[in-house]
Figure 1 (tube, rainbow, N blue to C red):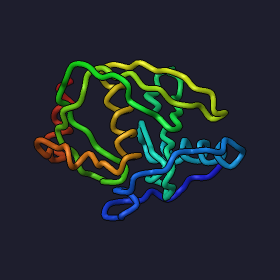
Figure 2 (cartoon, rainbow, N blue to C red; figure 1 turned 90 degrees about the vertical axis):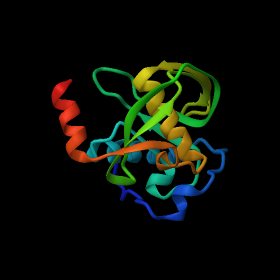
Figure 3 (cartoon, rainbow, N blue to C red; figure 1 turned 135 degrees about the vertical axis):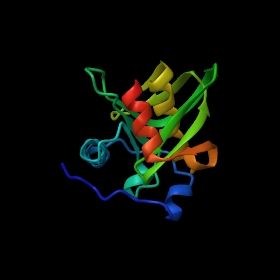
Figure 4 (cartoon, helix red, strand yellow; figure 1 turned 120 degrees about the vertical axis):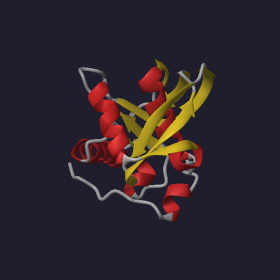
Length: 162
């Protein structure tokens, strides 16, 4: 397992629509493992393949706290509901944060590392993280959805109050 370099903005790979994964093999498993290690080493909760230089539909979300790691291959959003505005950041935009409106609920169909289809439902912070990573697979960056940018000092003050 390896920690991969994270692609940061500006880089056209971040705005490239990724292709579907068709081969579920040891190379894919290694990529998933490396992406996970990279995400953890970078103190992230999600990472998508284009953020490590691969233009394929692969993303990971891990909220920690004993929750299962979510590996999404060829994910497709099939249902959303509700709405909320929260502050987001991104490993590809170090030290940049902004308020983004996203659905409160999401239902996704995806494949696991072995190619098996599964369905996932999530709410709140988990739904937000999943949708953020799926956006990456379509070349959509969170900055295109920012309502208001938040500076680091303001963000730290909010965290202290919580």
